[in-house]
Image (tube, rainbow, N blue to C red; front, top):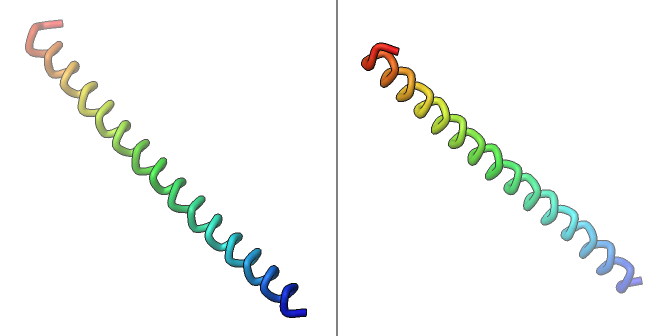
Length: 56
């Protein structure tokens, strides 16, 4: 009886840990994507400004 309870408790804990890990991993991916988008927008803006100053 106690073994079943411990096994069940461990499974619940594992599921919670995995869920938290998955959420953190997803958040890190979102932050990385936001950073890439920001960099791409800054680069596009710089290219556009350079083109305007050179008369393109």
